[in-house]
Amino acid sequence: MTTTDPATEVDLLRFPPDFLWGAATAAFQIEGATTEDGRGPSIWDTFAARPGAVLGGDTGDPACDHYRRYASDVELVAGLGLGAYRFSVAWPRVQPTGAGRVEPRGLDFYDRLVDELLGRGVRPVATLYHWDLPQALEDAGGWRSRDTSYRFADYAAFVHERLADRVQLWTTLNEPWCSAFLGYADGVHAPGVVDPKGALEAAHHLLLGHGLAVEAMRAQAPADHRLSIVLNFCSVTPDSDPEAARRVDGLQNRLFLDPLAGRGYPEDVLADTAWLGDWSAVVREGDLDVIAAPIDWMGVNYYSPTRVALSDDPAFVPGGPHPGLRGVEFLPARGEVTGFGWEVDASSFTALLERLGRDVDVPLVVTENGSAFPDEVVDGEVDDVERTRYLVDHLRAVHRAVQAGVDVRGYFAWSLLDNFEWAAGYSQRFGIVHVDYATQVRTVKRSGRTLARVVGANAVPATGYDVA
Ligand code: IFM
Image 1: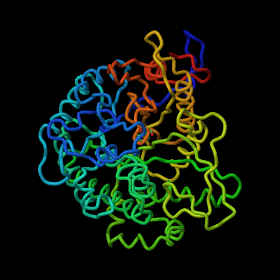
Image 2: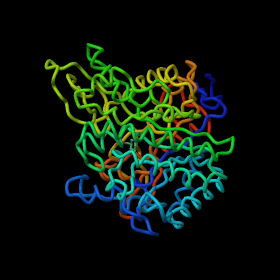
Image 3: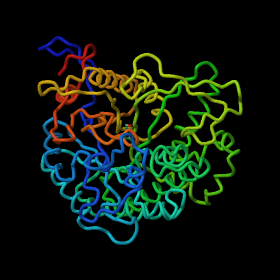
């Protein structure tokens, strides 16, 4: 719906009345305190300690020191007027070895965080796994081992049980594509393994873990609980021949989407990856039914489109994170890019949401969307014009999808705070709030003030960016 703001005479694109506005973070990226209160080591602690694995030798400490500063961070969230906050639970903080003994001090932290959020009128959205696998489970095979799926379901059940009286919105996994393919195919993320066939097996075990966790949580969940998974989608643009896009879309999007939607693993992706060996031998009878356990919503993480072309050599293996991909080249980004070099194209976001509106039969929530730029604090302000434009353009893109009939129920900016950007360490800033890591001073950026205005109006201006 479009209305005109009488004060400014600017046309406003209004979002549906119950639209959920929030910002997202993840435990390892912000908490710090990696050895405190009985927390066990995660694969990211081990990986970051490996020379050359993370830019600048950065580690999960101190990050944003959120473990100690959570109350003032929640105050920031409330100050921005956000109705919701998406956080993740660190598995090794609440169960140091990923099995058996539960660490009460770790669970207490999330208890306090949830109470703080509710006390300030902010709805908690809990993600159970955002990549920080307990190292002890990796030592036993990690996600390449089927046992990890069962350990995950056990862990999900006890965390859910503890917070169930106050948290209604749950996500099992964040971006299993990254866990499986960046972690086990490309090796640029923890645990830093290069094993393409094993990466596909890991993808199956992640999805199985999701399904088992949904079953366990559903069995104990009150009727108002809403369970989900969060996938990182990519819109794949072919240079000319759509065949290149089919292959990449298969490994990037459909390999995860199809089994979750009850369609099983896509035949074309099974055929494309068969030369690696029969990874689907790990799929046991009944697994696909478990993976297709009904969910209530799907989280959509979106940042950038990918450009691809068929290579002259059909046997060319581009390497990188897509296991089994052959005969395809990734093309350079075009036009405007972020500080990370990611192409900026909001129209591809609308197209993706419209496609998901057709392919997914549950409501969608944008659980991450954002951009990294090298910000500076000048006279106490961060004038992040580029991120602000990215934000507003992508909100318009979401609005267009809603207008086209796609059931999008919310938008979470990535990220509330600048934080540990995985292999890039602290070099990439995604926050709508700047963090000075030396002093831990937080400064709300122009993009944060803009989001606050958008949330206040439940609308984004139809043109221009001057809403801060
Ligand atoms: O920082 C990450 C986040 O942990 C998962 N989604 C993408 C973000 C930006 O790279």
